[in-house]
Image (cartoon, rainbow, N blue to C red):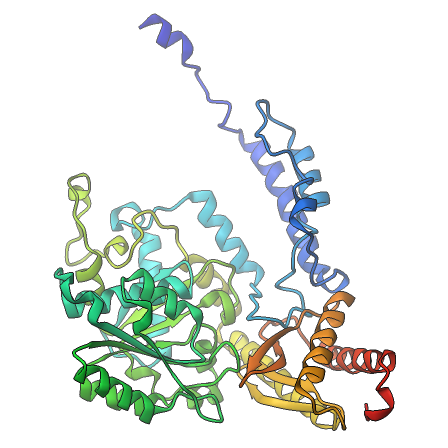
Length: 494
């Protein structure tokens, strides 16, 4: 006993004093604030090969600690510069995340207080905040009273949660028929739909990819025919996943038609509105997403167009009791925390027991800026994408492959006389490579109907008209340079 008592110190060295924590916090705040306020002067994208990155820091953990100044120096010199800057005004590739600073501070609160939000009694105030934020979403999307859900790490987790709940709703605890389940989505649906199905035990061959029309919308007649054929073959249609803003083009599937069919067939309708969903705050977004309120569940990602940091997704469920039926587990060690009717244990609505608060950063940002400012930022991003399209239409060598929708525009350079597919692909891929290499803009490529397309996605509130003009100019100047270097330049008009 004496040996044990002698080994126990009065205070752990891990327990820092107030002044030390405050000084360390000021350093981090200063670094982050300088980073965010100087983004326009930074390159939008920096990367390095794995073998180079391995040289940046020792692989073994140190036995003795370092000074905080030394740690900050390593971060500032070796680590932080070698990343893409998602909040950068020139980051218009993929679907960017551009968080507000109050939302960033919300995550600092979450980490500092280390809220445990899996059980009501452990974080009643913060859990109430999550309920409030989820009800904001319910109202925005026109879902009925009683709609609920939970915050998730992202859209992929939200969709997976919905698939598991739908599977439980259909099969209960008898999984004998799991190999008969089928999920349906368009061939433009996000890859997370396929992953969610696989993780839920649905055979890969039974995730149906329904083809799309010339506007990249799901063909409802093909969906109906496919489901009827599957029923006749003894399969169990489980869920239709409709897109409300596809990642490739921003397309919205025919939501009302799909909802009519799913209601008649008693098939779960899940709508993936991960990034475009928050456009519903605008008038044009509300019109474009009409029908989303009829979903059984909706995936949305506040870390995209609600301007909060990663990770922050959300699943809205028309009947949240179906989530609880699928995920509730009551082990002996949690009996004291079992939820009563007046309490909500979010651990019973999804896969995580230990979970942080993702609602606080949303609540802080919305309360600081107000809904009008956030709505105007979303509207502005859509206007900038329309502006980009109009600029391109002024140049006959731009070809619009999919018009501006929810911040996304797909296009390519198609000089007169260059009609060979492989030539066009090589030209546009090289344009993308060179634009990115310049460091001011990050754009990406995708494929539409087999053809390589250049794609921009404007969501961030820092992007302005000068950035749109800049990236269009960069595409044109690089195209001219590439053609000038080629032997066939005289054959092309650009």
